[in-house]
Length: 109
Image (cartoon, rainbow, N blue to C red; front, side, top):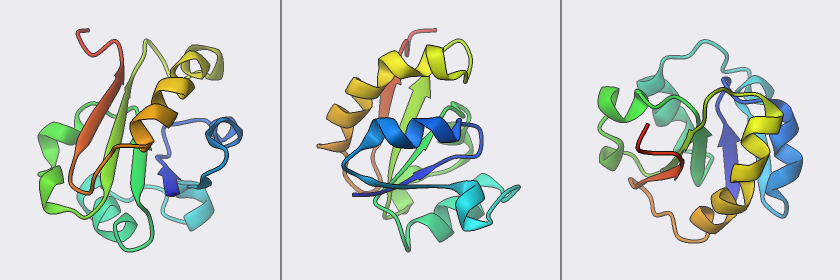
């Protein structure tokens, strides 16, 4: 799969998502692009967007886009906090469909 890491996630997570091809918003030169425009652009080149921005699902009608969305739920976006979620992210990627949102982590927070 082709994956896009949102700009709010550390680049170091790219290594944890092998064997997928992972680029960051920064790699694409898309820093600062608002969520709706980001999803519109990303759906043309990626299968899924991984973010820690829990508000994105309330701001955008994700089902209207042809890209899956993985939303990480963690107390912060530091690598040591996010690393334990990567196995669940890989599992979620095996099943995520375009227009679908999958939550990984402590969703009940």
